[in-house]
Image 1 (cartoon, rainbow, N blue to C red):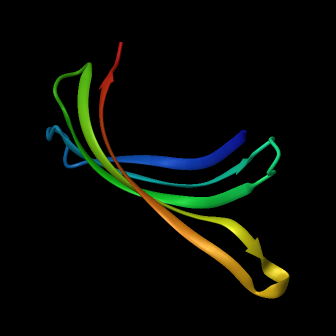
Image 2: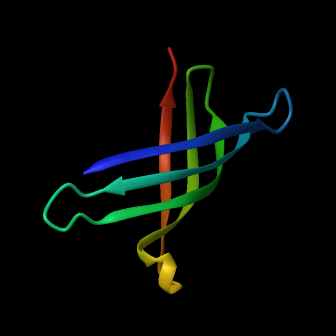
Length: 96
């Protein structure tokens, strides 16, 4: 499987002294199977999250991301199949 993506992530603090922050992420991704089927999949994603800085070196965050992708499409015939996947990610970041 060959996979590639490009996107942006942004973090917005709720004031200088507030430990709470918001996350926004968006991008494009594409994958191609190198096996017998040769299936190609591509699409985009958009996510929103909320987090809190525990201290200077640790934060916790919860992010929802919606992926929309096309896995079988024939643009010349006007047919395409649109799918979606939703993810909810809980993460911890440790900074040194």
